[in-house]
Length: 73
Image 1 (cartoon, rainbow, N blue to C red):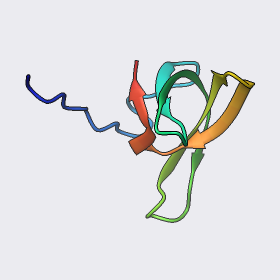
Image 2 (image 1 turned 120 degrees about the vertical axis):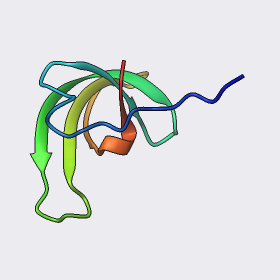
Image 3 (image 1 turned 60 degrees about the vertical axis):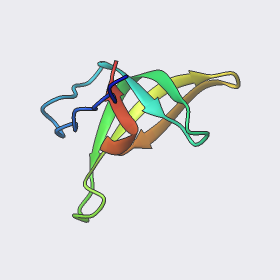
């Protein structure tokens, strides 16, 4: 079986507000979410962060995720 290659997300071009995405939460599990905001960090190391709303067994959550923890759904 060939490995799955993930396209690197380009900030502000691949993702838009209200877009459905998958995000990797702390438990290293991917969950469905919706982009609800952006935060462009001044530090070049941190870059762009996306505010995503998603649902866990404990209810709705809202957190910031970097491009490495977001993939298109």
